[in-house]
Length: 79
Image (cartoon, rainbow, N blue to C red; front, side, top):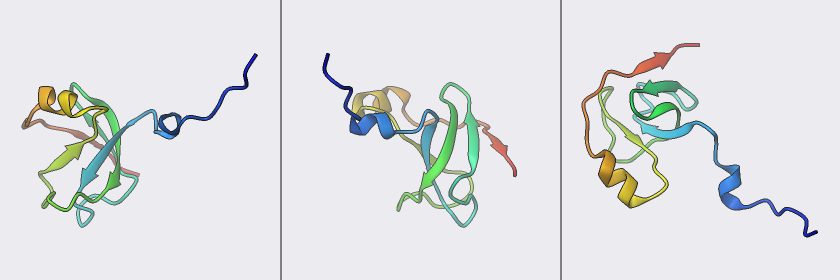
């Protein structure tokens, strides 16, 4: 039996990855996005400006296009 290798995508978090303006949401902030689930701010996203914009990570460009652009009320977990 071959040993299991640690694949790069196995290192991805179980929660989704979110890009947000870190002037408003610090790295590590958890958010619940309806239809997407829980995610964590892990990126700044150069084009993401202001408290009302976030960018969600998807496994493929096609999945991101299917999601599209939405206006949703998200739940922010405060520490």
